[in-house]
Amino acid sequence: MTRASTRKPGEAAGDEQAAVPRRLLEQATKLFAKKGFDRTSVQEIVEAAGVTKGAMYHYFGSKDDLLYEIYARVLREQTRQLESVASSGAPLRERLAAAASDVVVSSIDNLDDNTIFLQSMHQLSPDKQKAVRAERRKYHERFRGLVEEGQASGEFRMDKPADVVVDFYFGSVHHLGSWYHRSGSLSARQIGDHYADLLLDALRPPA
Image 1 (cartoon, one colour):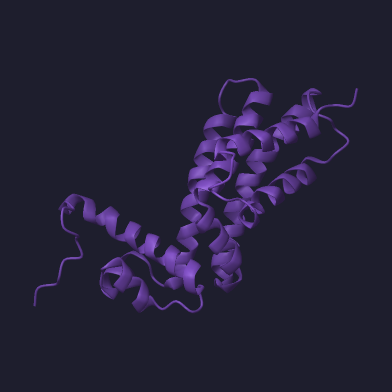
Image 2 (cartoon, helix red, strand yellow; image 1 turned 30 degrees about the horizontal axis):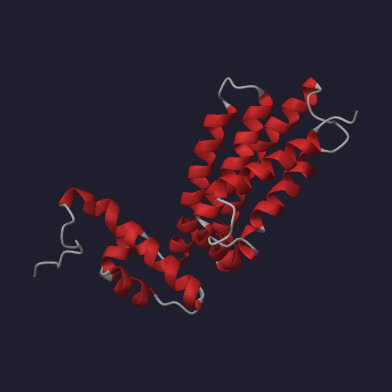
């Protein structure tokens, strides 16, 4: 018996390997947003993506894996951006400003993914939750390293612990989903730059 292709019309065979997981993630994100993670079935996801359950399980072992990847792919891109900025030869304030603005922009660009994940993370298996926290911790530690670099050089104030500064900043980033609207007057980059300015102003040494 010949297995039916999951390829959509106009989709090249070489693209199918990347297209199938992408479609599954896109449709899972929409369904999780509409119905909630716990009320969305695997069958609904594969039907919306136009693939078989076998195709889904080839890429994702469970619905948990889909939820995990929705967030993990965003975090991987944010980590790549941060590493690129942090390791550049730009002055420290420019590096921290770019890193702070970039994470706001990428969070807004992936607002549905982040919101769904933060609302549903508690439903992941303990192992998956542990993996997410470990990856997020590595990202925050790299970001914190920029703050600590400035404190060590005297460029940033030293009376506020770097970990408190970073936790405070990312608390506001994670809160974006509760108020941001794409129809608003400010672009994602403008909001990111405002956030970065506020962070740098807070780190300026007292006169």
